[in-house]
Image (cartoon, rainbow, N blue to C red; front, side, top):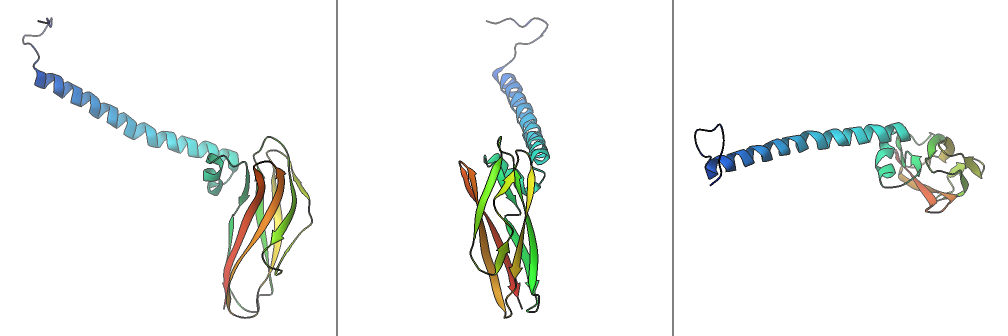
Length: 165
């Protein structure tokens, strides 16, 4: 029989179970507080690296050359809008420079600047695009694929969506 100095009674199994349950509740409370806190700290740290909340998840997936925004929303455009200028950012979080070699457009209605484009490690480069708006009502859903010289990041795709009324 175990001795419990300072106690006037011997703990029963129900007291031991109660203490164990209290320990589990305390542990669960610590986890419930620490896990969300750790996620917030991780989000803030990655946001500081990428500079955009939209780039946090791609960065966590291991992507180091990112395009922001990946989907350009033109909204609702009038038929006489003519040409719409669009800019996307290419962020190089890779340890070496990235060269954008060229691009493939899904439509001749999209024009781009000159290639190749060199982006140093840790730098951001804006890529300008011009979208010719159709003169008839239709849905715009086009894409531009940028080709890079980095292994594992051979291409980056930008979608351009909108509607002409």
